[in-house]
Length: 126
Figure 1 (cartoon, one colour):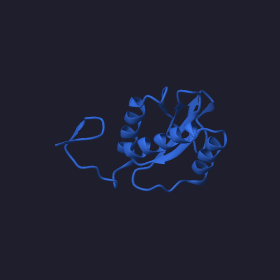
Figure 2 (tube, rainbow, N blue to C red):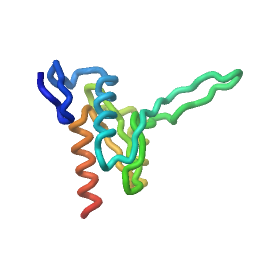
Figure 3 (tube, rainbow, N blue to C red):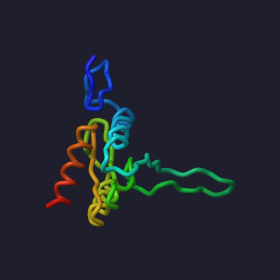
Figure 4 (cartoon, rainbow, N blue to C red):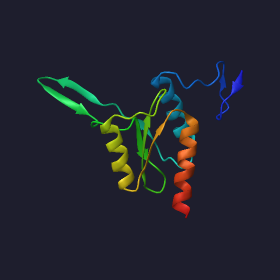
């Protein structure tokens, strides 16, 4: 068994062709351990029927993980299981977050999260 970046032992090697749900668990775990992230939550989209009404959750293209960074910037992470291909609404949401000086990116795993947040920190410091 080998340990990942967070010291968690894994029986199987890291495989990029895995399902998005497994990637999402890893990304959320990474976000919960990083000191730059104030908090982050899984964002579900869709709707539920309440009586005669449908109540929507999220918005079209809402990132899979959303929350504030320490310092006040918003963080949006779109998680993909094996590719970085975005639907148009997802690309638009990432663009809007970036236009508002937030940090938004696509992640396949915890390595992407670490790389993107380190890059964002460097941009703030320069």
